[in-house]
Amino acid sequence: MRRWLLFPLLSACLLAMWLLLNQTVAVGHLLLGAALALCIPWTMRAVQPSKSRLRRPGTIIRLFFIVLGDIIRSNAAVAWIILSPGQRGRTSNFVNIPLELRNPYGLAVLACIITATPGTLWVGFDSATGVVTVHILDLIDENAWLDIIKGRYERLLLEIFE
Image (cartoon, rainbow, N blue to C red; front, top):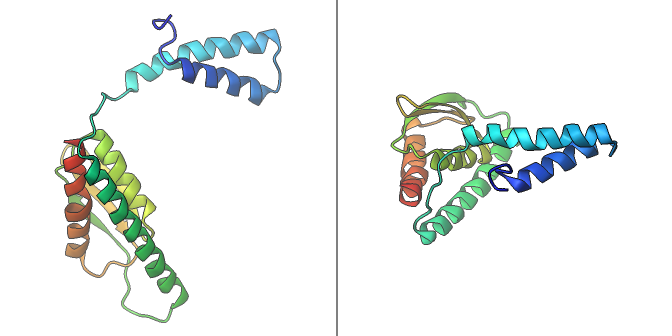
């Protein structure tokens, strides 16, 4: 059974979604939905990344609280920038940051952290060179952002995923 249904929960959800979107349980839609629910998980197998083992649960908790604090501080900073438009000398720009992190799960978490923090946005990642491009709303010191992303986030993610 597992050979035909690679991801049973995904197949069930796909069938249910198909029937809900078409708002019918007619035999034709049921058969077409079942065919899609059986075929789509086979294509998912090709793009499924390898399993990763999380290490150091204490580091995960520490990273969570660091990110939470950074998000709160960034919310206040972005609100201040928006509410006080008269300040001059503020520039937004792109910063290229070389990373040592290569684990796909670690990179995904880093992308979520950077994008969830107001005022920053993960723009792209070059897997050949390991350089991530980040857009910073209020760029004052490029080296400070290098230290934040490499020293605060990447260092902890390397402990967790590598």
